[in-house]
Amino acid sequence: MSERKRKSFTSQHKTKVALEAIRGVKTLNEIAQEFGVHPTQVGEWKRELLAQAPGIFENKRGPKPEDPSASPERLYSEIGRLKMELDWLKKKSGIDH
Image (tube, rainbow, N blue to C red; front, side):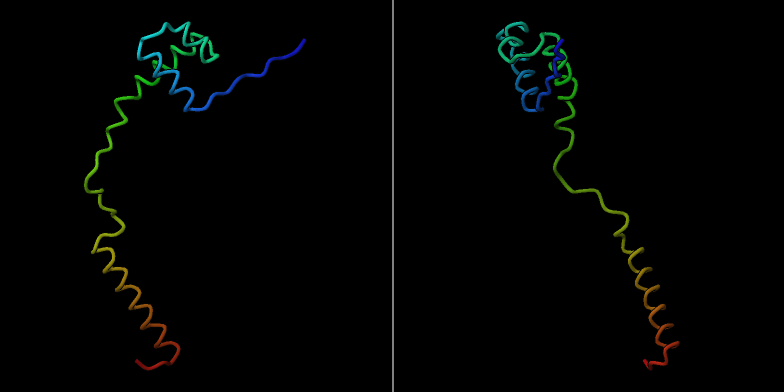
């Protein structure tokens, strides 16, 4: 007996098949035969594409959210801490200001 390997399809191929199914020009069986997949798979890819479609346009352009690690207060406190460490190191090493 020969075992059949599972076919794997790229995301581009799946998208093309799902879009063809959404168009509705051909039946799922015709699309499946054309692209070499099972009709049930065509239906699954169509449902998956339709379910994820609303989220495609959610990320709108505009100002990006501020990075909390770049807040001025945090940066000024970091500068102060580093200045104190530098002064302490200069004092311990005997280097004059």
